[in-house]
Image 1: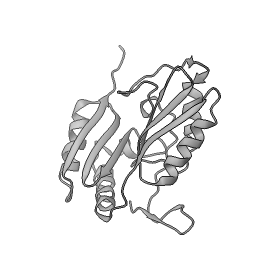
Image 2: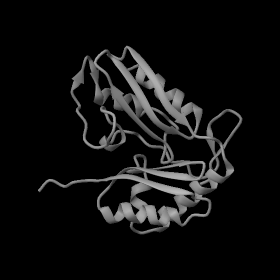
Image 3: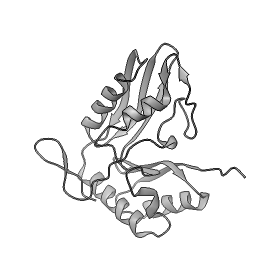
Image 4: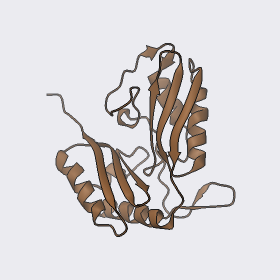
Length: 193
């Protein structure tokens, strides 16, 4: 996957991964963790509607990660990482158009534009796609795993089915030239029996 820009600011060149953000692991209505969240309205803000509005962000992909926190006064705090400024801006607009949202604090960090980081992203994508245990986690419109690359440091967010898959992701990404560290924040889905 090659990341580049055209003059009009739209993603161009290579495989573009768009995601819909509708899965529960992508957003958290409480700070500090991922997983199943409360879908009930809190002070008029529906977590499900906020998630749906955020799903309209056209450039959100496997190399971005967005979470949110709702406060009792109708304020939404957006957190996470975006490769492009437009993704951060569109997330704020999407949150603001959600019924019950009175204010939005946008703490999404726009990752630095770095040739080295883009090369790491490309290799991370290729290695994930070529590994028979990992390819399903990064494919499709709603990838389960997000790979954040910031100045050679890689962070993994999202969910996997088995602990061994989380370990495999970290091991594969550590072997990429230019990677300084890998922070594995992947959560293992628990099956109810």
